[in-house]
Image (cartoon, rainbow, N blue to C red; front, side, top):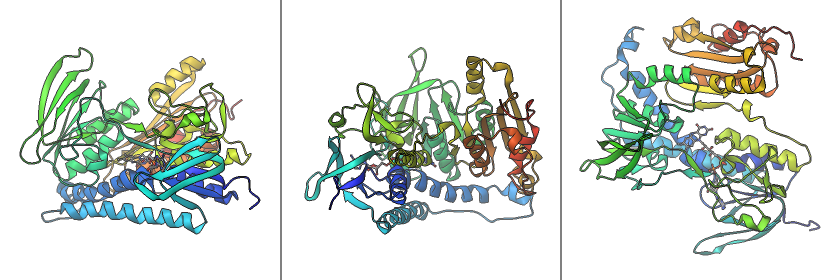
Length: 491
Ligand code: FAD
C-alpha cells in the first residue's frame, strides 16, 4: 500500500546474473521480484559452469590415476583404474540441483518473490509473465526498474542438425549419456577445450574442427601454443584448423557413424569428410532475447540478438538514447559472456538504479578455462595490448615479463612444472595491461592480478607485497618483481 509500483525492481531471468542482482537489490532496500520460465540458476547452474566442473573434477581424477609414470616418480603404484559413467553423470546432475536449491532458498530467505513464467515487457513499467499451456500460472506486475537477464543458448551454425544423441551441444553433453569412442568437437574455445579434457580422460579420441588458423583463437598466442603442447599434442587429440564443418549427417550411437563435411575457410572448397561417433557443437552462445517485446520500451536487439547497453548497463533504445529504468545484464547483452561478469553487471545495474553511479571495468574481469592444467587471464592478450598501444601512441612502452612454473618450488613439489605466466605492462606508468597463466590452479591464481587491475594498482604498488613460501602464488610475485617500471607512480 502506498507504493506506485508492485515492486521497486523486477528481474526477468533467474540465472546467476539475475540472482546476483536480486541479492544486491534487497541489500540496498529494494522490493524485488524475479521471473523465471525454466530452471532457477539458468545456464551456469544447470547447463554450464557447475555441471561441467563436476565432470572435469571426476574425469580429472581418472586422468591423474591413469598417469602411472607420474605417480611412480613419487613412489606410488596404482593398480588398474576403472570408472563408471553413470555415477560421474549423476555427480554433475546432483551438484546442479543442490546449487539450484541453494539459490532458490537464498532468494526466499530475503523475501524475493519468485514468479514462475516467461516474462515479456508490456510497457515502460509493466511486465507480463505466463507459462504456455498453464492458465494457473501468470499475471502482470509493475516495477519502477526492470532488469533483463535472460541469458543465452548454444549457437548452432547452419547445416548442423542437432539430434541430441550423435550430434549435440553442451546442453546434452553435460548429461554424459554415453562416452563415444571418437568425438569431433567443432570449436576450440573454452567450452570445446573443457569437453576435450573430459572426453580424453574417459578414453575418447577427439578431433577439433576450428575455423581459425590455429587452435584456441581467443587466447594469448604464446599461451595457446604452450597449452597446445600440453593439452592437445600428448593426448588422443587431432585437429583440423582453417576449416568449417559445413554439413553434418547424424548417425546412430554405436551403429552408424556421423558424417562431417569439412570446407576450407578461405577457398570454400570441400576438403574432407570425417566419420566419427559423435559431434559436439561448441561454436559459441547466442543471446536468448526473443519474445521479450522490447518494442514496448522503444528498444530492439542488434543484428545478432544482443540487447544494446551502455557502461551503466542501461538499455539503449532504437534512437540510441537511454531507455529510463530498463537495464540488461549478463549473456543477453554480450559484453562478456561469463557467469561472474553477469552477476557483477547485475550489482552494477542495481548501484546505478539506486543513484550510486557505477561502471564495471570489464578489463578487470578474469576468465578461466578449467582444463588440466587450467588456463586463465585478465585484460588484453599481448597481441591486443601491442595494437592498442600503437593506436594510443605508447607502443614503445609495452613490456612483457614471463615466468615458468618450473621456477616455482610448490609446482615442482607437486611435479606440476609445466606452465607459464606472463604479464604485459607499461614501462612508463606501471599499468598492468594483461596477465595470462597456464598451469596448475591458474583459475585461482589470476585474482591477485585482476584485483590489481580493478583497483588501478600499478606494478610498483604491488611488487613488494609478500607471498607465502612455497605457494603457487609466487608465480605472480615473480612477474611483479620482474617488471621494470621507470616512474615510481603514473602521471
Ligand atoms: P543464464 O544463466 O543463461 O540465465 C538466464 C535465465 O533466464 C535462464 O534461467 C532462462 O530460463 C531465463 N529466461 C530467459 N528468458 C526468459 C523470460 N522471457 N522470462 C523468464 N525467464 C527467462 N561461465 C563462467 O564464468 N565459468 C565457467 O566455468 C563457465 N562454464 C560454462 C560451461 C558451459 C558448458 C556453458 C554453456 C557456459 C559456461 N559459462 C561459464 C558461461 C555461463 O554459464 C554464462 O555466462 C552465465 O550463465 C550467464 O548468466 P546469465 O544470468 O546472463 O544467463
